[in-house]
Image 1: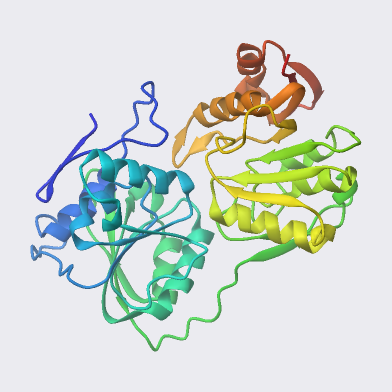
Image 2: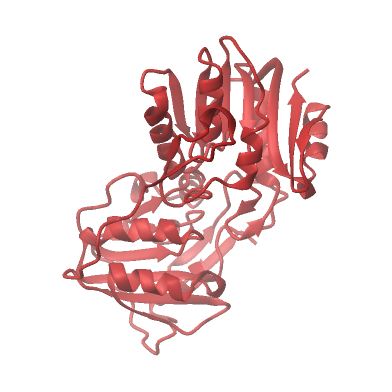
Length: 389
């Protein structure tokens, strides 16, 4: 199940962190289609010429490192918003006996290579992230750059193609194969594309406690980057009221508004903002610094949940866990977040969670903590509290 076979070789690939119960592969038909196109064996256009990969190759949005691993002989640069994708790439290179230096790993917050000769883009779920990345990449491509996007048919819309067309140049698509499609774009260096609209800012509503009316900063691709989501809004109305010196973690921080609320409500607290998204942590830091946190001690960590936090060092964890991994609906991330929170908390420390009622987080919390208390609820959401005994 874990073996990807291409004309370039056979690769043993896993997601990160590896979970024996997870039956999802580290690649899909869109990745396979792109690799076949580059090999010249199948590109959905009638041509069968291998791509020239002798120049600077950049792979954007590679979800679990499958593309970077298969293309390692070309010494590509991988650009991703995901810490987990970077870790998966490292793991998969090692599993396949490939030196880690074969792939240069960059985040979406770092400058891309000065000149890009081959640009391969795995279309992200977020149209905003695609827009931001195309704007960042456009100055580095030239008229001869080979640009190929890939995604499942359900991920590629007219709006997706319009972004390529507006920011890079003339765009067309391939035939569909196994519900996947390729995007071919011919860069036009003289295109008048306008400026990158990201990051966005918006003012919070007037009914969300201590952060009411403040302005938050949102880089492209973070959850609800253009407005406050209703789950976080409900959470902000029911956060714990605490005082005194303590260490608080905003776990899966997004734009950092929950951690900001905790910091403003308790000036003695030290807040750690952590997320696996580079875009999210950049948003959280910008939000915190712009709203009175310029002189406050705080940490901003891109990582795998609380894996980098020493055990028994945290008083309070605040969490609005995601329940999607790309296109898949799963509670695996929430389970790992809850388990990590229990390890990080001091005895008597608390985890506060907001989630949709139907997700049944109270059951998971009882299994991990041995307890779960309902703090607040409405027809859609619940706020739950679990204590480390």
